[in-house]
Length: 104
Image (tube, rainbow, N blue to C red; front, side, top):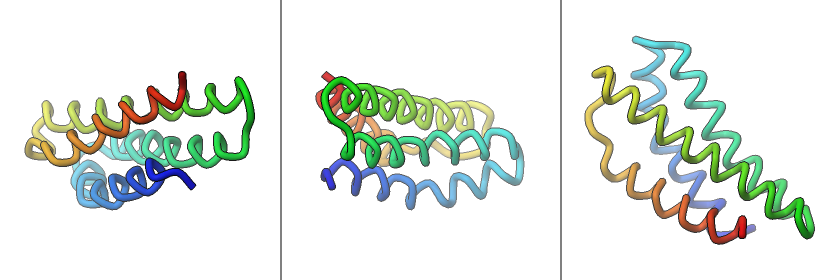
């Protein structure tokens, strides 16, 4: 499995507390965050079993879901549900860069 897959799982583990904070104030946003972050890992796994254009499309979908994950965090921060999450945001940015490269 690609290194980026492990990095995504690390981000998902780091998001546990964020999900809990969101669930208390905004269950819909918490569900969206869980769906988006899970989708990243699942699409990377699917891409590893794909070839050609389908492989690139799965990585592209994973990239979109990773960006959606970041947006959920930023919205939660803007609404005051969590403090700024610089470390997670930087990890997500690096993952997005790797997925962009893989999607090409």
